[in-house]
Image 1 (cartoon, helix red, strand yellow):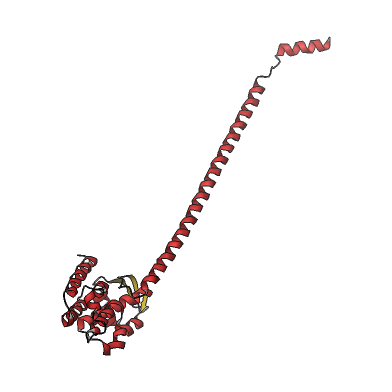
Image 2 (cartoon, helix red, strand yellow):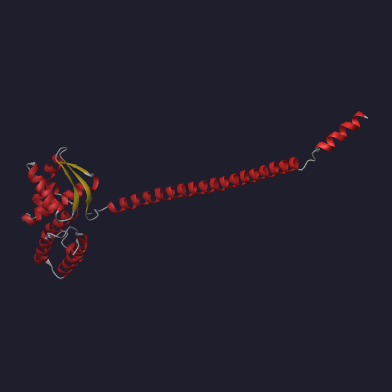
Length: 247
């Protein structure tokens, strides 16, 4: 089963669970969802009305925790740990994995020093083990570990949930891309048209040249025929002409 299909099944499962629970039981569903090793998208769960009702209640910390897993990083948790439930080890691992995905959104070459700081990792061996076993092996990223340059070169990274306000920026980016694509298409069409025009001109030039060659051949053939058909004097005719001139 591929990652996308597994995620879709898990999302459907937890959306149904969240829709049927309230209060502390719903908080437990959120903890379970954010601890699930194969789940990395939470916006659909966050949109469940029962969870939205946590806003402003004693259980709002669970709503904030779910928002953290949807959009935040390990650094965000450390900065707000006093207002959030304490994370279990599986949640800590998950949030660090999500942190790598966030970093990969804006930079395809991630320095080891930056990764170690963001993930609270103390040495390169521990960092590389984490990237290999917890990120690349699980399929959420693909890349190359460059020990000489001390960086992780990202070739692929799974996308995270859209942050509030990010949709408008993404639409603008896609709109700009579409405009650039349209302009490129127009440019290509103009070049094709120019190439077609030059091709037609080349064909016409070749035809004119061939016609001139044919005319030259005919002219040469006619001159040659005219030269061959001119009358020539025989020896007897020459003698008579000479006698006539003497007389």
